[in-house]
Amino acid sequence: MENQEYSVGLDIGTTKIVAIVGRRNAHGKIEILGVGKAKSLGVHKGIVNNISQTINSIKAAVAEAQSSAGVPIHKVTVGIAGKHIRSLQHSDYIMRENPDRFITDDDIEALKDQVKKLVMLPGEEIIHVLPQEYKVDSEGEIQEPVGMHGKRLEANFHVVVGQMGSIRNIARCVREAGLEMEALTLEPLASSEAVLTKEEKEAGVAIVDIGGGTTDIAIFKDNIIRHTCVIPYGGGIITEDIKEGCSIIEKHAEQLKVKFGSAVPELEKDSTFVTIPGLHGRPDKEISLKTLAQIINARVEEILEMVNTELKAYGAFEQKKKLIAGIVLTGGGSNLKHLRQLANYTTGFDSRIGFANEYIANDKNQYLKGPEFATSIGLLMESLKIRDKKTVAVEEELEIQVEAKVEQKEQQAIASSESQTSVNQTIEEEFKAPVTTSRPSKPTFGQSLMEKVKKFFEEVE
Image (cartoon, rainbow, N blue to C red; front, side, top):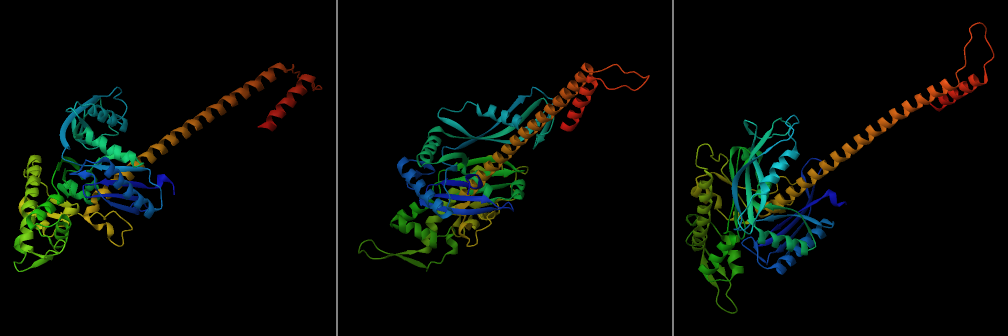
């Protein structure tokens, strides 16, 4: 199988690292070739804090993905998150040299490149420059300016910025794991690719990706990205609270959260208990599920209040900016029981759980259905998009080269034809004999030679 046929998404998370290999089938759906998963040991709240451990975790996940897919992995599209991520709005424009020619993708890229030269705070770097809407001369609110005519091309941009050190650390881990980083994508944008529909993005929706170390938010309205942010709290801090509140080890706290945890204490009975095995000969410990739910509820409410603050910062409660499609909860943390009901109550928006396998063709055992795979599947989709663009660019380049060669051949053929006509005329002039009309005479030597030459060229043609 050639490398061009498949793509790889690599999600470097706080609790796990996932590598997914896939390709697009004949119907446009994604066919998963292999999945690799490893425990993430060197990442804290979305930021790499131990290079060697992160490299080993990446190698383990990629090795498993290679083994299950049966293909070598060289290039990966990687996700980035962390509390250092921030976003800003920016407007910029370019004056086109030739307004008679229509606007092309090259003009848009030139405008994006100009935005990328923005001066950031010390140690910061631009990750994404996302156009929101364009303005051509005096005409505004344009979604797609390609093909239009105009002198001044202007756009509003959503610019995503991150700490240079964190970006370099991710790049180094990927490189030293023996891989090439094809692209770096903001994780909430990747998750939105995997779980949101076009209708939701148009109506207005907020995706809330609750991971192990961070909660990532992306807000869409009118099919345009409007706001992104990363909250430095996730499922890991809930586990930490259970561990402290119940005086148990982290492993047991995580199991309690996953198997028996609930976000709404009122829905749990006082009389229901779960038994935790004691440490090294110590007696077993009984924990009330209502008490467990109260511990979880306190932290989840805090996270949802932070989400609410971001929604207010965007203006989601204003009539024009209202999120008609509400909230889509995804990520491993969204598996928590009764989380959707609590989100509805806390934010006032209708919410649903976003499953990641909507675009997957061969997930018959529902393994990838879990919302914890949303980011990695979104990164795979982003990688496939990049491949598709490159394929189209190569095909267009080949088409241009073929057209140029055909044109060159045609010109050569015309030149050759003109040259041959010129040779015929020269021969005729050199060997032309005086013609007498009085009586037919025997052809002269020159006339005979001219007839032979003409006959020769006729045979050649």
